[in-house]
Length: 329
Image 1 (tube, rainbow, N blue to C red):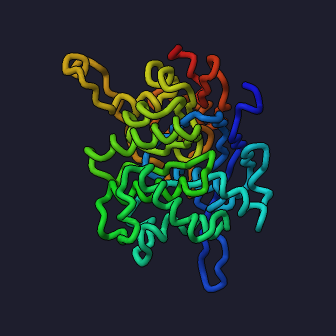
Image 2: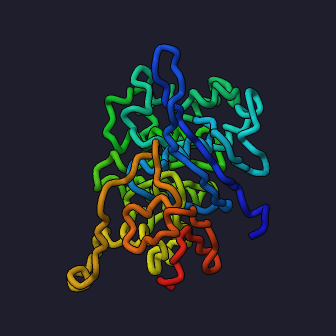
Image 3: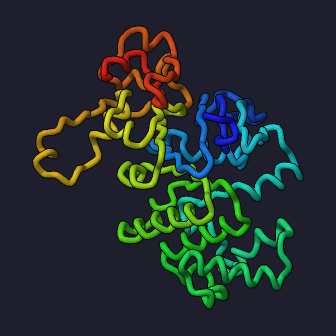
């Protein structure tokens, strides 16, 4: 893969949240939310990031955009390491990358009209006059299929799907090249989810956008993503193209996740084998030694407790962190 085709390169990204106790707020531990994540996102592609709740997906997205400053590692965006940027330099880079938040009820200021919400980034970054901003707001509302006359209304007057469209319009206001979609459909009705995903795809084609699409709905991720990364307890355990990952998963955790996805063939549904994981996800405060997944893994051996498996390329473009992945080839 040529370097100029890669928009984002995340290398050994770590984000730990300190746990403080006592009168003097002494650090007694850390929540290891993201613990050494590496991947690349090509220009114009959608990389899906999946995993159970609490595995560090959203923290990864926020650490990439520097909404959380990483504990260590590098985030190379368009040739610039964002981790080293501060102040005005970082502010200028923020125009190129935006986020669509999970909860459209919480991510929109209830005291601002929809027009003010969408106009705010244009004014903050000083890229449009008041008159130009008004016109741009109308264009953006039309782009996400909302009536421009709605600009004077407030978020509480809209449905969940409409609010998420407002969030998408706000993310597009500064014409970014990269958008982190942090579970943008999980708070919406099923009937609305497909509409929002189709809108995201149309906007991607129209503006050559690059997405990091965070979700735990595996069927939706398969629909929208070009490649998929699977996270477990702060680390990426498998990364491959969409069809490769869904047709021949090589990590036991990915196999268990995919076995839980219903398929629309009743005959195949009754005959296929389900992988039921035992136990609960360990705490990110005190993760297991060696392989993070070993406490629930059906094929774990003693080496899994002693060493952390290397995230390696087993087939062209197919990476997996498992000592025994070759068994599934």
